[in-house]
Picture 1 (spheres, rainbow, N blue to C red):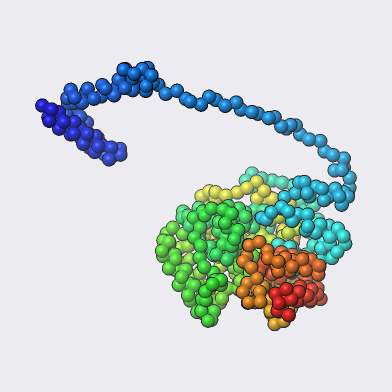
Picture 2 (picture 1 turned 90 degrees about the vertical axis):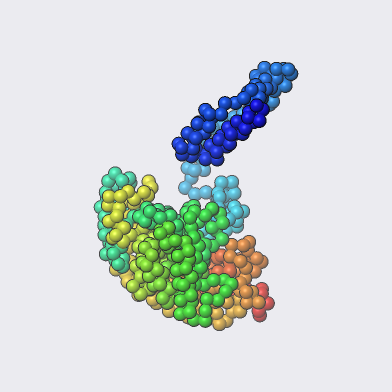
Length: 543
């Protein structure tokens, strides 16, 4: 009898175990468990075992030991919450804000107490120059010192610091007639006119345009559009790249700044210019190898999972990397082969920076599916960027929701300034002007490479140039993004002393002056830079 009871209990446990293993499986399994439960009746020993547990676990405690296993009582008493109120009443404006000008001390105090820096630590805010005026390609600090803007600030003051009167008047007129309109509620003439002008001058069938405020926002929108258009998630981007400071664009970035965010379905690919290994002895070998690598990576990732490849047509912040002939053409061909969109990021290189209106025109027959640009669109006279899409993408979103937008997209005042500036520059023959700048830039960079041991390599295309600074051993002066070495700090200090204003992210020394710089101004800039590099040669023991 006891054995029969044990057998029944084992059968019941087996049936119950089967049900648990199924984890909510089919009805058939559940039915089998129910049938087993109905057929196997627990014997007296099993029931006694259950009853014993019920007597041990009771609200009022175990039947034989009432102080044991009683209903659980929390052991911690609620803590006292110490609330310390802070005055949250709106403050009062001080009288200094009613003055036309502030004293040097008042400015310095405000900088120290209230100003935050971007990207790096806050401490340098008290040591950078206080710039009070700009004119042409020069800026002036509060001590009256003059500087040549060697890098167009952040490669954005492409037309210098003298605002054309017609651009100013166009913005004033728009502010007086319609200073703002939410773009989803109504249309403005200037929006239609700028879209139409860009469609006329942009190569290929890039006919649809949107206007965010900055380059990162444009690339963010481009990624969203690519994903919504294709229904795929992955974006491929290069290691040596910078696409912006928002979460997705910084994830797509390849340089040190990408470490500030988490990956967001971004797949990194190698540029044709890696740091530690050779891609071949010729550009032709490099192009063939890098395209083979990219195709294998696409196959391994699964082409049906890749929405787009995003590349800077000419890599900007990571060294003005000039693409080998055939590389961008090959990337375009691979994207076509596998149904992947090509996004060209021309936030830096667009609007004549490399010569033509857009840098992708350098590559035989290449037209991106999505084009982004920003800095040169307005020359930083006002914040604005651009997303352009080919006709097939514009047609797709005729009835499908775009899934991207923002309050200040297509702002009429910034559009008015951009429209007038674009009209002025198209009539001024900017491509021919940049060709003249390029000729001087090529001579200047060639001379710096020849004369200075601290210059490892140099690149120039249009008004877009960069030097790779090296130590006495011929290796890079420091790792990009690492704290500045003593030699790098010396370069930065000497630049300011020699009247050179601009970005310097060692070991990359960018030379990207305003496109409107004259030949004498450009030669003066190279002369000052020559002095800076002579000091670096001494510092590394090369002289």
